[in-house]
Image 1: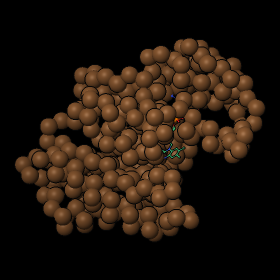
Image 2 (image 1 turned 90 degrees about the vertical axis):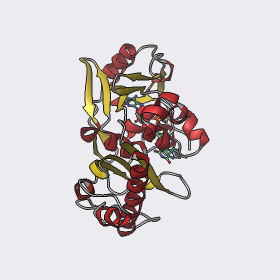
Image 3 (image 1 turned 60 degrees about the horizontal axis):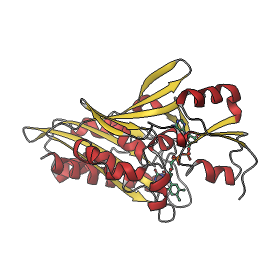
Image 4 (image 1 turned 180 degrees about the vertical axis):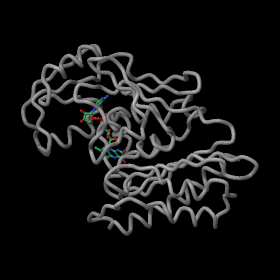
Length: 287
Ligand SMILES: Cc1cc2nc3c(=O)[nH]c(=O)nc-3n(C[C@H](O)[C@H](O)[C@H](O)COP(=O)(O)OP(=O)(O)OC[C@H]3O[C@@H](n4cnc5c(N)ncnc54)[C@H](O)[C@@H]3O)c2cc1C
C-alpha cells in the first residue's frame, strides 16, 4: 500500500503545469484531490515518475454565473459544488449529484475536474454532465479548447483530453423555466460509487414533454445518453405508465457490465428503475 517513488512538482500557474507535462510526457500525472489517483498509486496500478500537483494553482476553483452558463473551476470540490448558492439556484442538478458522491472526506478533497478526467465508469458527475450538455474546457500548449461532454468520455478511464492538456473549467447551462432535473442513484454499499446513476433533464410545455435528456452512469464501460428513452418521452404526457414504458429502454444499445456485486442483467434492470424515478422527479420539478 505504499506508492512507488516519484518526483513531486507544485506549479503555481497553468502555464507552468503544462510546461511540466510537456517536459515529462507519459512519465507525468496531474494530481488534484488525489481521491482516484492515490488509491491506484498505492495499489501500484499507476506508477507515475512525476507528479504535477495543480492544487496550489489559484483561480481554478471558483464557481460563477456567466450569462446562460455557470462556469465551474476544475478544482472546485464536490463539497463546494454541493453547497454553492449559484449552482443551487441556476443548475441544481450538479449540486444534487455532488451531494451523493462517496462520503464527506471524499467530497472535501475530490474535485470535479479530477472526476471528469478520471472517467471512472461508476462516477456520478458524468451522468449529469451528459444530460446537461455540459462543456469541458481544456487548456494545453496551444491554448484553450471546449469539448462537449458527449465527445469527452471516450471509453472506460479514457477521455478526449490530450496528455499535455489540463481541464481548467466546466460549463453547465442555466436551467430555464419549465425545465426540471434530477439525479437518482443506486450506490454501491461499500464504496458509494454508482452501481447505476441516472440524471434526467426534462422540459415541459403545455403539459407535455418538449424535450428530455437522460445521462446514465455505472451501467456500461462509459456513461451514455439514453436516446431511446429520450425519444419515447418527447411529445408525451409524463404520467407514470408512459414514463415506465419509456424507461424500459434505458440500457438499449449498450453492453451492460457485470461484476461481483451486480450482473449486467441486474444493472440493465436498475437502469430502467432509476430512469423512471429520475424522469418522474425531474418532471414534477419542471412544473
Ligand atoms: C472511498 C471513495 C469513495 C468514492 N466514491 C465516489 C462516488 O460515490 N462517486 C464518484 O463519482 N466518485 C467517488 N470517488 C472518487 C472521487 O470522486 C474522486 O475525487 C474523483 O474521482 C477524482 O477527483 P480528484 O480531484 O480526487 O482527482 P485525482 O485523484 O487527483 O486525479 C484523478 C485523475 O484525473 C487526472 N486529473 C485530475 N485533475 C485533472 C485536471 N484538472 N485536468 C486533467 N487531468 C486531471 C489525474 O491525473 C488522475 O489521472 C470515491 C473515492 C474514494 C476514495
